[in-house]
Image 1 (spheres, rainbow, N blue to C red):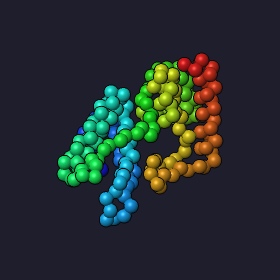
Image 2 (cartoon, one colour; image 1 turned 120 degrees about the horizontal axis):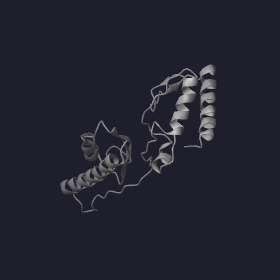
Image 3 (cartoon, rainbow, N blue to C red; image 1 turned 120 degrees about the vertical axis):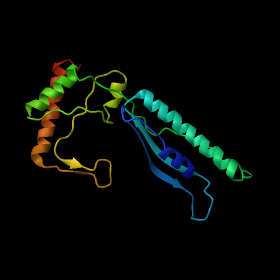
Image 4 (cartoon, helix red, strand yellow; image 1 turned 45 degrees about the vertical axis):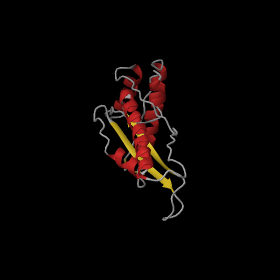
Length: 183
């Protein structure tokens, strides 16, 4: 697994479309001086592009198998060769709603009505699923201040005024989208 992780760490991915990966959880073994019967790692592979994501997934699988072959060649396989099994534990497909769609325009108009400028970007949210099958969707931030997303010290300020405003923006965006026919 260590060899596979080292190979994964050397992967080159594109900045545009943004493509990234992370080996986030490792496990295996029962003691410091015993050969583990099983090891595992949870790996997150992401891209704004379906084609780039597919390339990354293919390369990831190749790396796992290369590392297993190398380990089997370097060690005794008398008790059995090392094998690789992969299991998909989460799938967040790619997708995008065009900025000129009625849904995005409605959300932007509501945000501007509250004195803010909408921010357009590609992020991984539950909106990815409908977008991936051609259903317009947007993600609306909850508002307020926050930081260190996806870390153990992630934080959010739940100050009442910004929290209430965020709820108002969300509700008015839903109403505006309904009035526009959800397009």
